[in-house]
Image (tube, rainbow, N blue to C red; front, side, top):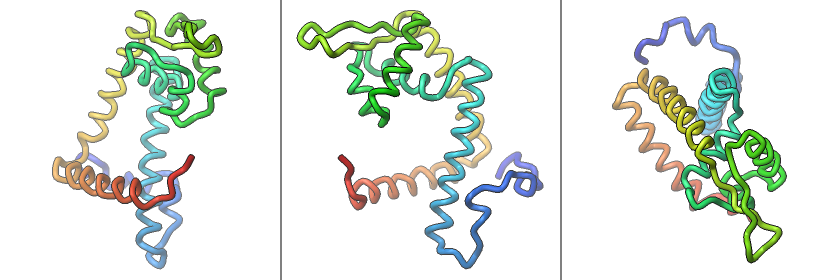
Length: 171
């Protein structure tokens, strides 16, 4: 653990993992460690997006989806990709549209559908956020050795494959 003070773990806030002990199953402890890491990183990203860019993680995520689809996306596609309800997408889109970051174009063949696209202003705003986001992630992982990052990537790839093939599909 490069550059991490020895007392950092002692000063850390209690989390789900710290509530377990050696008597708990190793798989439960691993799950809670993964969950804790994800929660800590996501919380930091949420705070940084709010403080440095005046935005939220859901808005950033929606803009990221649109950045990857220059032709735009229907609300239902956004909802499916982000795994949230259409109502959530509508609310976020309404805010972004008011700020001139996205535009909503009606689909000629389906009056109930709209294609959502980033505006040039939205692309510029997203680029700034994405550059910051990448720098935050780079900085975080720079404190983990190359060997550990590679091992984690491979182990999580194995877990992802198991989850994709063994877990009950939804929907």
